[in-house]
Image (cartoon, rainbow, N blue to C red; front, side, top):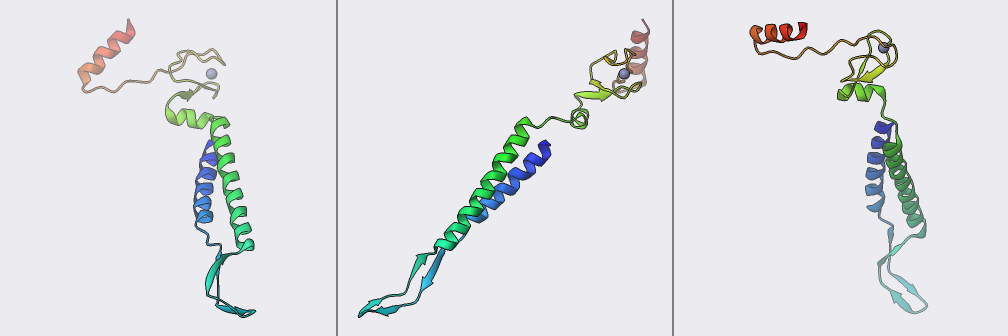
Length: 132
Ligand SMILES: [Zn+2]
């Protein structure tokens, strides 16, 4: 859910940039109205301005929904495992804290991660300390 939020936020941001850069003016050729010469100029077109506003509203909605999903979106178990905060119990497949020694769901002992050793001596030392 949080990933969707980030995605919506990015899409909304790009959409907003596009909307902000929309040109709403149209050029008018010089006219001769009632004896008065009106030179060529550019005027804002209400239809284009309305379109720009619609795009801005959509992009703002995407950004707001994206932020809400990111802030209130539940962090999934997979994300917690990927971050190393949680691990899956090999006995009951429930997700428990990485530091847990006993599973809170099934009560069985959890295998502890084996630290990395530089050499065999260090490993033997660790093995002996574990047996005590
Ligand atoms: Zn378990």
